[in-house]
Amino acid sequence: MGYLDVKRANPLKKTKVLAVINQKGGVGKSTTVVNLSAALGESKKKILVVDLDPQGNTSSGYGIEKEELEADVYDALLNDTPIEDLIVDTCEQRVFAVPATIQLAGAEVELVSVDGREHKLKEILDTVKEHFDYVFIDCPPSLGLLTINALVAADELLIPIQCEFYALEGVSKLLESMRMVKNRLNPDLEIFGVLLTMYDSRTTLSKQVAEEVQSYFGKKVFKTIIPRNVKLSEAPSHGLPVTQYARISKGAQAYVKLAKEVIRRG
Image 1 (cartoon, rainbow, N blue to C red):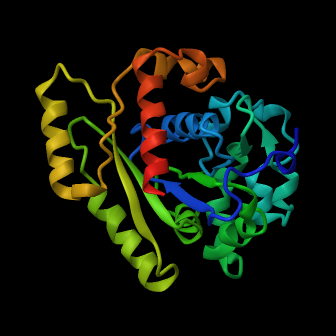
Image 2: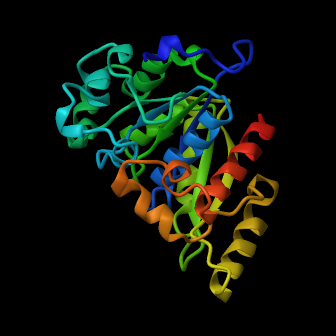
Image 3: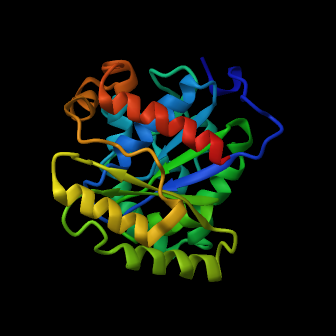
């Protein structure tokens, strides 16, 4: 089934484009993109996931066979391939994806010589985003040109922060980049929400980090907290969101709860 065959939940409501971002690796960006989009799809929202990370973890998390792809998001950015030719189905009926492969690793360098390089992703998404309720951009763990493209294309940021030592390290640099893009390229850019991930209720450290993040970001922090959960770790190897792989697990239930909170925020 093609993406044009599925109707939006609310065609009159403006599409929300969210960049899921943290320049630290291993904080749960791809896990959040895969599982939150799946939970929103189950809530009758129509979702487009854009994998902008050369590691392609979001693509793998949805069971997309990257070796079999004839083209990916790299081709939209640098070869002018129409994005509608790159959108693929996922195992979730209302979730569609623009996958990434390792080919994207060269994009940071190649984009430097492209006119309007910071706006390439926005221009691409503007041609299709009206067909979706939400667009999620999975950003690479860096603040290079790919991430700048995501910041320009996005309406708001969703920032996962793991409940571990040095959790807030580098966040000030991320916020500085956000302010730069807001001042120069995307004046409407805001933070949609901050998500605590990998929370272990048995440890004092997790509780301390949660308190520190909530003190720093205030009401921007989601009430839903994503626990450290083995099923969340296992699901990607099966190419499934955790809501399909282990529906009754704590990880799955947390993302279902988060989806409801995201919908309430608009």
